[in-house]
Image 1 (tube, helix red, strand yellow):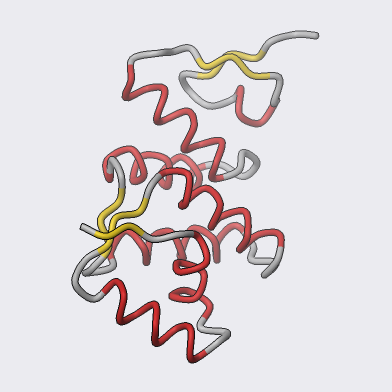
Image 2 (cartoon, helix red, strand yellow):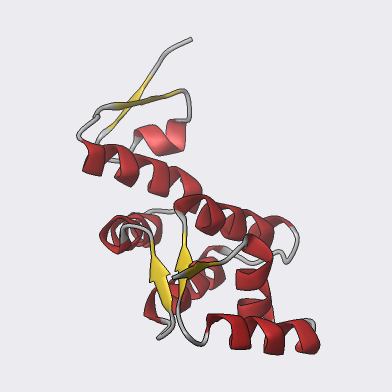
Length: 128
């Protein structure tokens, strides 16, 4: 199966360059794999460059999860991260994804200096 880079997902979601959006559609039509890193980068690009808010970002990730031609790396992990992201108001999606990857691997608690992330089950705030 093919894999996609961040810019392909961004074109699929934003459709801000119609020629590239068509090319992205054609590339993923027969199936494409999305890594955790690409998904995290996509969330950063949508937030920082396209100024998407939390609900818009959650909806975009949901669209990718439901896309008929895309296969997420550890879909269960991505779904759990999306649930955590939707359920609270501060931690970023990539933080939620990091926590869920650690959870699946059996490596909790996740140590962090991030106060928002530390509020999630499985994370532990380090003082310093």
